[in-house]
Image 1 (cartoon, rainbow, N blue to C red):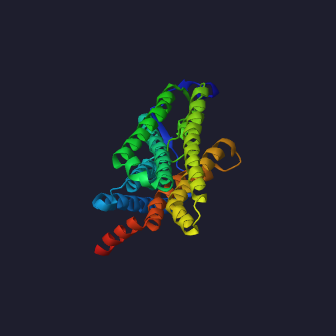
Image 2: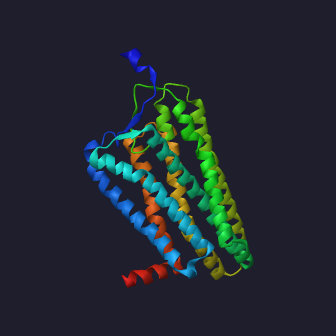
Image 3: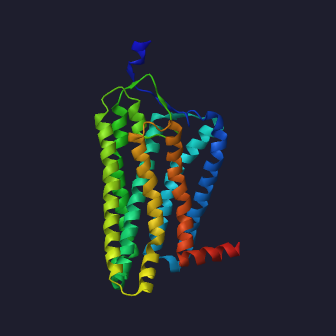
Amino acid sequence: MEAFNLTPFSPSTFILTGIPGLEAAHIWISIPLFTFYIISLLGNFTVLFVVGKEQTLHKPMFLLLCMLALTDIGMSTCIVPRALFIFWFGSKGITVGGCLTQMFFFYVFAATHSAVLVTMAFDRYVAICDPLRYATILTNARIAKLGLVGLITAVILILPEPLLLPRLPFCASHIIPETYCKPITVVKMSCGDTRVNRTYTLVISLVIIGSDLTLIGLSYGLIIRAVLRISSKKAHQKALNTCTAHICVMVMSYTPSLFSILTQRFGQGIASHIHILLANLNVLVPSMLNPIIYGIKTKELRDKVGKYTCRM
């Protein structure tokens, strides 16, 4: 039996177990998960609808909000329906192709989301540090091109991960103790040489998050320098208020991601079900709160949403 377990094979399907140790609570866990997902969809589709309908909102900042909403919808939709199928119907099987596809699209959306946050930081930099040239530097066409560049870059960086995984041999187990497919989890199931996979996953995570955080930090460093040169306290407050929503969204997006990456690699003492719950909440909570934050902090958007809400 031991020799059999160590024989490499290529599974046709994987089994997603959901949350090991909390199987009895799957139905109860699905309630907040489903609720957060619906709120996220309603909020983000509302942003897309209102910005699309209102000509006055066809500006770079609101185009970026639409891009952020699309990535939030994409990330949450990649993982939540699959998790709910596990919790509600016990549908745990997923083909290898389905697993790799889910993995690819989720991380492409996540990398594009990060690129959009970088572009938003650049948008705030131009708005505060060079306001007279804002309309000429950041046109809708230029923002669309930056979004496309972010998407293409994400595809190029993420594509090797699902392409590298099928070459690995697996030994007996094809059970994934998660609610969705992750590269690091699939790699751990292999009995072959996984150094290339592990190294690529780590490097890409550091490159994407590290470079994006560096660019955001640079933008806000220049913003702070420009604000400190303004003598009027009222102007200080006005300038910083334009960045509040983006800072909140940025903190909510990067802090849980960094925490999740660090705990997965170095938090061996943390129970596996905590890792899994955090991984799901790290995606759902920001995608649910992002449209709410921008709706509250951005007067133009708030007024237009209010107009359509009153009509209903």
